[in-house]
Length: 235
Image 1 (cartoon, rainbow, N blue to C red):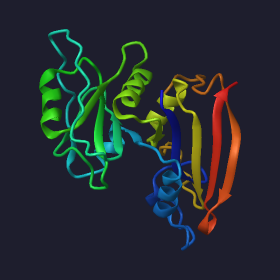
Image 2 (cartoon, rainbow, N blue to C red):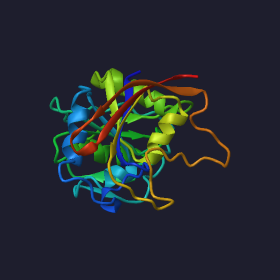
Image 3 (cartoon, rainbow, N blue to C red):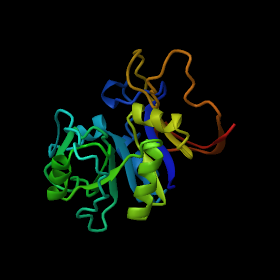
Image 4 (cartoon, helix red, strand yellow):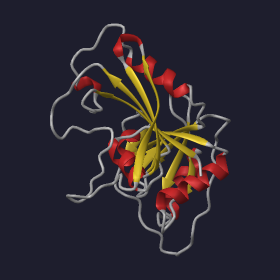
């Protein structure tokens, strides 16, 4: 199983949309600070959810879910045109995303994590473009996919970079090994805006139950951005 580091930047109230934040100091560079911290982990790539990936590039579009398989066969992992690029992994179990190329403008190779029930026609579409495909496990969807990714791509460390729903799913499954949060000196303030972790559970549910945080480090970056790191361990 790869080590999963949930790496995010948020306002002081934990919200994720910088265009909603109050102005920060001129020398607090969001992108530079975030990417510099991310690079320090030497990860094989990063993970996001479907909604985040759909907004990442003009070459990616979101449509209706793919049809389901009728033959009952379990599809095989497909390795596309990686070219030694870092991985951009998207959890899209229903097969809603469509791609025009195998990579992103920022240079990463796309890997789609899908349900094994998606139809062959959708998988063939991804193969033709060169997008790699791995599949969720019926009993342990996320863990099964991560095991395939580590084995197939030699990926001992991966960054989990949101949004809040997929971060919550990993937390609920007990699959986050470390939290790496950059707190930007600004505030959003509105209830209901997506936050670092947003598990859509039932009232009273505790997705972090049985886990606790152990302090690793805190670093103050340019402009007052604070970088906090915690190990996630069993309580």
